[in-house]
Length: 457
Ligand SMILES: Cc1cc2nc3c(=O)[nH]c(=O)nc-3n(C[C@H](O)[C@H](O)[C@H](O)COP(=O)(O)O)c2cc1C
Ligand code: SF4
Image 1 (cartoon, rainbow, N blue to C red):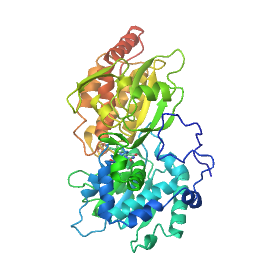
Image 2: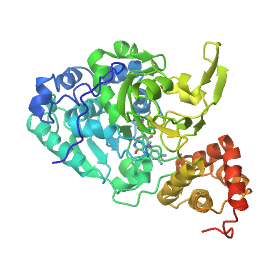
Image 3: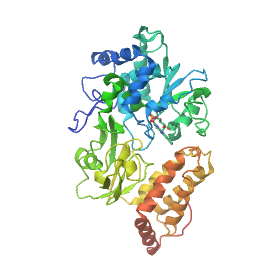
Image 4: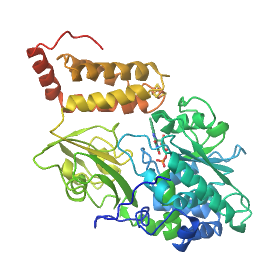
């Protein structure tokens, strides 16, 4: 079976908690190995507590979702509609579909029992009747590894009937996804899990905590988030909250890619480091002779930063900040304060070896392909943006394309059923706003060299 390769060199700035054992050459995915390292002891500890106590630890720990929106997990669990009397479902979102993101697969491929344990603790805390791992179709080995781990855990009594002799029963099922980006959006995922096309549902009323899987209360959490649940209960919520920085507790796994010398996944204490440290120190900096053009700070849907950008504003305590890209704290709130988001934790570095128009053309091709087609602004707008940037990349840029692109982007964001609308609009809106001169320059250059007619392709 092919598994993700181990990375034995751990950067000294890393604070490995979730990936503590993952890259140890002597660590494997078997339950025996996991239990030799203390595995399933935290589940036993959780089962000895009341579900409310476990929830309390997660709340106090301040775990924020690692899937994209950074919503506090404990608060999401509190929103569960318990009065309906319907069964409660727990779904682990293992779709990992945002371009640039490759952290959840490290956990699933190298330490699957950590996820299983985190899920069973979350299941106990929320009184879940049945739990699912919805894994992306393109990760077949991850699915096999997880299935094997669940079988082993079931045989030892940690999954299934009468877990750990507690009287509580909950099965855990691996479901292979439908190989589309939109299957990662939680309501699209739920539709897909129900056996239908992954058409996202409109919120309200279809908030999963009230009307989720089979119209029952449902929690959807990311792989990394659910692993943090284990550590919050192990350490105790208050102790866990001391890791990282206020409102940004714990550690976080960043996927660093693009034009850096050492791309890879790095687990760091939240907010204790900056984008500059990640790119230049941990990531080894740019390739020789190159200079920075742009940084996409949180997955391809996040708003781009241009080299030389400055971000000014007021901190919560009233003090002022004035950051360059390299000063932005690596956490949830830092990128947001700098006009973008940490999203799925995928940092994409772009140097001056590429043309920024080509970068956007590439991103737009992806989002146009992945629109589910339910909403006109997203379906049509993403396609128009793709057509325009593809035409520009093919040598037929027009100066007026810049305003046209901006106006299409402006008419998508905020006008759709799900956040794919923003995901496809934000790159265009931000690239055009930040690199207007480069887009115009390219159009003028192409016009001057007389490169053919200007038509939509
Ligand atoms: C278009 C789109 C794609 C998404 N893809 C993923 C994904 O692949 N994995 C993921 O965990 N969350 C993804 N999300 C976010 C989920 O909808 C949801 O917020 C998340 O799974 C909740 O988990 P968390 O609170 O633990 O972060 C996506 C959202 C959108 C709008
Ligand atoms: S925003 Fe796009 S992906 Fe989301 S429901 Fe509408 S058409 Fe589908």
